[in-house]
Length: 180
Length: 180
Image (cartoon, rainbow over the protein chains, first blue to last red):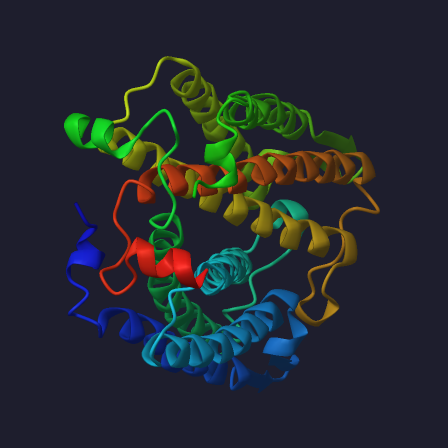
């Protein structure tokens, strides 16, 4: 029995594609964020004025760099060393968490920027900085698309690590096969 | 070769303990959040007035319920069926992401509540609602402790699923053992 991914290893392009896609996505999201600047009679507003937006920009920059490296790692002839598999797995998990955290934070701040929260006197800013908000929103959507690549990657690398171990002693393979 | 967790399956208490701990943690975090209400001359402020705080309360409630069920699942005599392992794995991942997202969002909003962001005229509220902010902060810290249980649990359940599969065809076990 081999996992779907394993049984279709001839489709070697799946993993490099999933690793390469975030390069373009993260760079696009980063570029949009960097360009999200708008001025009016109230003053100039840009991404660096809001901590959450800076965080998403950094996360996209770091994830783009990691995606370049991990794409390279996935296309060069690979060794099957366990340490390498663990290395990729830990980083895939960490970057998935990083993008998820950044995406969640920006979603909340953008929601407040659109809707405001009168109870705590944080009023909406998007009616005055529409173009700014739209660009940040576009950057956020693209970041979530990148996250949609990172999640299956973290599953693939988990599979690559843990399939090299024997199952827990209570659940040996013969037993599993007969029961699953 | 068997993973550390697998080789120490005699220490059967590790997984149930990690599953049971979040029950207490999430309930404590939820209770603190529900009690984070403060009034002064500016009005009454409570957790339900801030979307992010509501989200963390819901997340803690749901995770406490899931932790009860998954503790029960981890202590009853288990079948080794693959579908059950997948089921637990998917939920462990989902709840890890849920808690991480909620924690990240509340961290950001609480940061804004303490520090404010003058550029977008969102002023700090904690100087006026100190007890409220402290309780939310305590709830957040406890939620992150629960997250620290969910992360290793999602690794354990990933191990339980993927160790039942053969490694990718390019990396068969003999090859791995000699190279790792």
